[in-house]
Structure formats: structure tokens, C-alpha cells
Image (cartoon, rainbow, N blue to C red; front, top):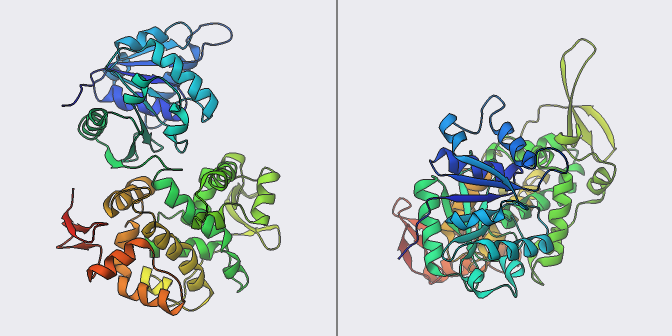
Length: 442
């Protein structure tokens, strides 16, 4: 049995809330769109401002006037009781545990029996949000973690709580995929879920291992060139992506991981920014939104566009250069198994990420498929971690780990015991499960 979702309430009109509201309105659903009441003037001005922004820009978020007409504005003080008419209530307010807990109590008092409540949190565990809250809410609650920008990114991570009714999960999975057109990944209630757990490990490992390249005379551009096309990552590479996200966000991510990763987790090693990067954060050089990060764009006196790179070792700006990769390091295997400084860096950063992912089943996911899909749909990687391991050749990876006297991650142990050549077979139609058997791809 599943429930029916015919109406939606979106709580919060920030970037994520606005994206979810627009997505639902475009799909033909009536949307109740609430935020804080304005301190002066029109009470619904905060939500109204978000709707106005939805209609602006070169690519408006709302596809037509009919979608706009489906959005009803309101505020948390005057209109919260109207959520009683909604089948799905999405919380997309500030990422603060105490505030979310208080807000969920208000939602619980106003909603109707049988409605579904989800949080769009990107990393706060659902168990922490719902601990001690009413049983009815714990049965009907889940996390629906959309990725930004909501209208573009395919991934939604769907996470149950310990008491979530399976009917809620099945309803959400079907609705998100069939009505909203999303790629649904089933994750577990662990710190940063799947995509951010692995993707943030990669980014923080990349930042912290960069000294290997700098000491050999390489620079940021060379790292971004390596952490781009050769490994199947979008052309921003590593530093370009961090500039886009913002060092302020990365600093918070590192702190969250440092506080919440399990003891002994490999991610603890990288759960901080390296010294020179931390200094950038402290002086406000945090990325594109501040005008400068690792890169900055400006214009010369002649009006020409100038791109500059911040030299971490010297602490000075210089004109950006086009990086060339050494011969043979233009693909995944050639790069990760190269013996020079760039190859050692790539093995530590990206290779370490693949090994980290291979050790996280069943902790964050029950299977390799959900992890691979999360990274492809959430971070736009060309291949997921287990698809990359298959591309490298698991036997070659296992041999390298043996030569380095390093233990095998859990899923590589499973693969070795099963005598399998890879994590996928039959043209990708079957995958290797944690039980050592192959299963049809869902």
C-alpha cells in the first residue's frame, strides 16, 4: 500500500525551498509556500520575494503562468494551520538542529493524520531531529535531500528514520521518480548521507594532499586539470568546485565531519582545512561569492578579461596558466597508477575516495548501485566509485594495496572472496551485493 501525494507545502523560501516549490508547481501540484512573516509591510513578503525571483533571470524557474498560479503564499505565524490540507510537507529552513526540532513540533500540531513530513537537510541526521518527538510524526517522517539547483540536479537522497513507516518510503520513492522526475537513491541515516559523505571526503582529501604536487613544482591548475576530465569530474576540477561552493561552507563541512564521523573513520584524517586554506577562509577569501578564492576574475585597463590564480605556497596572485598533464596521465588508470608526484596525489585523493566508498557498505548504503548513482546524479561524476574501480581493474587495485601493506576495504574483500572480476557484469545489468552474489540492477 502507498499513500497519495496530490498537494505540497514547502516550508522555507530560500534557494532549496524555492527550487522544490517550483519543481512541484511545474509538475502540476498545488503548493503552499510559507516563510517567516515580514517584519514590516506585507506579511507574506518573504515568500513573495522568492516567487518573484523564480520568475526572473535568463531561465525562469517557473515554466508558465499556470505553474505560478498553483503557488499560494503565506507565513509561519498566520498560515501554518493550512498545512492540514497538504499531503506532503517539506521543511527547508535553516540548517540548525534546535530550530528544526522546534519547527517540527509546530508542524506536527498543525498537520493532518496520514500526511508525510520530510526535511531537506543536507547533513543533519534525522534521528537527531526527531529524538523524543511524537510517535505519529516519527512514523510519517523522512529526509528528502534534493541537490542544488533543484530543477537541474537529478539526485534526491531518500532517508528513513528508525520508526518510519515503509509505506511512507514507497510513496515518496514513487512520487519523486514518477511525478517529479528525480533519480532516487535510498540512503541511511548517517552523517552527510551518501553523496556528500563521499564527495566531501574527495574534496577535503584533495585539499589536504595537494602538498605532494606543490613540492614538485606543480600548481592549482595542474591539480584541477587532473581532477577533471581524466577522472570523469566536471571541468571545475577540485579548486574550481570549492570556489563555487565556498570555503565558508567547506569549513562548516569539515567541522561537522570532525564532530560526527565515527571513531576510526578514514575521513577524520581530512576533517580540517590545510593551514594556508584556513588562512584564506579567515580573511574572507572564500570563493566566487566573495569575488576571489583560489581563482579570481577581473578586467585589465584595456577591458580584457583576466583570470588569476592564488599561489598557496607564496600567498600571492599570478596570471592563471593552462596546465598540461604528463604523457600517459590523461585517463583514470594512467593517472592513478603514475609514479610521479601528480600520480601519487591522484592515488591519495581520488584513489583514496574509491577505497573509502568501498569500505562504507553497509554503513551508508546497502549496495554499490546506490553509491554509484548518488555520485553520478549528485556530483555529476561520469562514473561512480565502483564503476571507476571496475575501470581500473579491481585485481590491480588489490595488488597495489597488498604491495603497500594496506588492508582491503570491505567490498573489495567481498569481491575477492566471490572470485569476481568486477562489481558489475553482463553489460552492467547485474551488480555484486554485499552477500557475495550478483543481483539484477534495480
